[in-house]
Length: 236
Length: 236
DNA sequence: AAATAGCCGACTGTCGACAGTTGATTTGTC
DNA sequence: GACAAATCAACTGTCGACAGTCGGCTATTT
Image: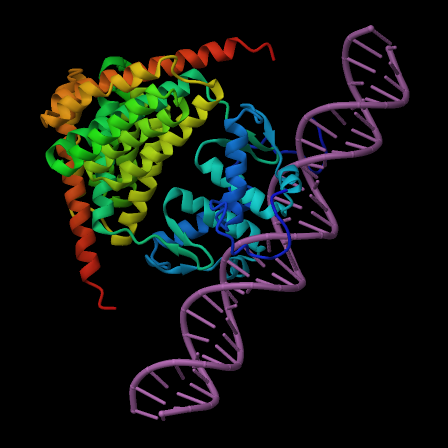
């Protein structure tokens, strides 16, 4: 029963790449367009036009937009259509504040459950951050930075919080993508994780929370300022 | 059964509710069906069947189900369809844990911003809780209980947290609806809000957090236990 | 009778079509 | 020339249809 003919599901080692899910592919396209600035905040995304350009029918296009709406990247007005969510500085600040609440809680729980293996994984991740920072890979650095914080949430053990963290990351990343390059100094960013690791190695929940608070506060201020600047810059 | 009759948009003064949004109405129907047990956890909700029974086409039915999916009440498996999310005790515990993180954070912020008017509103709300408890209106009591906690989040001032609180409430309420009557003793439940109010009147963030933690912990344990019991009871 | 292979109904993913809206453009009036 | 009414193209909400897929049922085999 293993040898099928033509339509054989490849037991390959290859990359499956294109999920065969149309909706996901369309959503990815939109996300990318938002990320690289082809779709600016507030821009209309007409499902009809989107479908036409991608060569699909409106049904999956609409569904993809609804998916992105549930993720916060798109907003819709009934009978009016879909638009790229235009985050303002206040909203980003709110999101960071939420993230702080989540992460501090997860971190506290994590300190009571963390294993040696976990510490090793986190340490390795921070090493990766340094490597990327020195290589000047800002984009990847941001991704792996989120991955580090996600690990911390995972160790906390609350799956719902991890899911929410992913959700928030998506939004923040989208918001940040609009601004462009995030950190002028990647090396500094990577470095800010060291105090966190020290507290983690000591299983010191209070210290970790304090450091984390500061770490996130910095990030928040930085992003919000970048956002405000970006909002003022373009003439339009 | 959903479409009353021909086109006539009733200029009537009656039966408000029915937003003219088809998707919302369908979603409400499903939520109600879940709430009153017609749709049990894990049950399949076929979009085709749903549409047929409600006299609509599949498009809005599908969209309604996706909406509920984004709210967590429904889960979908590709090419397989939609199912009522069957929360297990662990998941409910996770959600409560998340709620605790949110609410404690919001409460702390709130204590630094709260006004006299806010205190008055909260006080009035607790009075309402007592009234409902004594009247034996368990259903309404639960609703207004959430409203109280929501107010607290609102005072905290982070809109994103309020939104998330709403999201979570929906899920918890759905989970609880499955279990049926929640509290054997409504009067006790109402009473548990007094210590919170005392701390709030004193603007004592630390005390409020401590009380809140206990308050939520109680609720969590209670719900999880009810859920476990419910899971064992039915022979199926 | 149990297990397997094939069949069938029902459902999902996707499509194109139609009617009612919306925002923008054009026309008409002062 | 400026403002209001009529017009128009494009889009959204909804619909029914078709093809491929899934799970359950029947029939066949051992």
